[in-house]
Length: 446
Image (cartoon, rainbow, N blue to C red):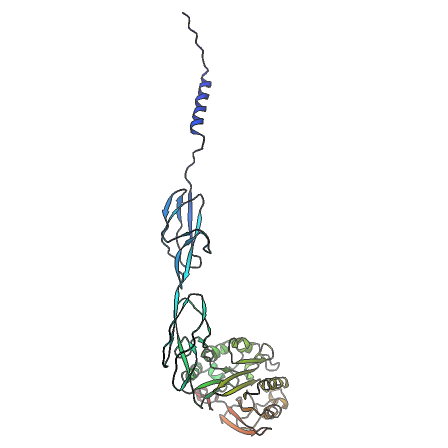
């Protein structure tokens, strides 16, 4: 019997087998796992953290937070910096998707405390709780102190820290704070401190300048010091070195203690006396120095304190202090008159560098250290200032000045104004005394 066979080419069989394999095993291509990165962002905090590497689809615990943020506590991670994304707690498990991600630290403000200290007074006040970065009005003072009136709050018990008025807005920093009550003696007596020409103290006897202002601060309460008035020649020249010393170790300390104070120009304080240039003066003592000081009124010319006015009140008395430039020009005198006219209820004190000689006579023109030797005229003299301004205003009570050198170191003149008012005119300058006057100041007791 004959048998028949059909031969099938081997390549056809191979193709069929290959097709079968593809149908069964190649419908979804096989791929290897991919590694992605978790990056941690401090989001305003401080410190550093390494990234975490995970493969797609794997799950792992997040590394513990290592960032810090003063005044805030860590409250978790979030895929969005503003906390609006997906959140994760510290050490939470995370399943890696198909892309790298950044997790941002989420911070919650701490609740800090404002503690009120009576600082010698009596009574009690509850602390205020405030979260870091938030602001609120301070609770009104509830302390009392027999013989004293509440002046303000201060971060320092001696009044040399940052001051806040009663009920002022307070912005909480990164830590709790204690505010001390600052008290002012209530009686009929108070003191104004006159600082004579300070140039040698500032530039040569710097420790004396520092001690002098420290003494003022230490005696602020006991002597009821209510204002400090300069009479010019703050430094020997209009220089950064001199003015930095004058402010940092003197006048700025008084401002920090919230004592109304008024340095004024002397002839040594001009960048150029002939042109009356005050650029360097206004850099250190211009209107910007008085920002936020309720006792500052105005300066003249615009953006300058070549001429300046401040105010303060004691008990039922209101005072205006006007500082005038060296041998003032008519425009400065006119400005002073406008300020005085605008404050008719205030008793007025005038401070100007050159007005009386050390013998108690008003400068009139050609005398030593008078206006003419400096290239000015008799119209700028002390006598001219008396005639054109001082004697014509019934509320001017006092004139302060310095400038003349050598003994005697003090002089006094009393004169009657046009309206019958007595005006006391006082000269003081100790710069040529031993150690530039050993820090002597003039204490005017009212």
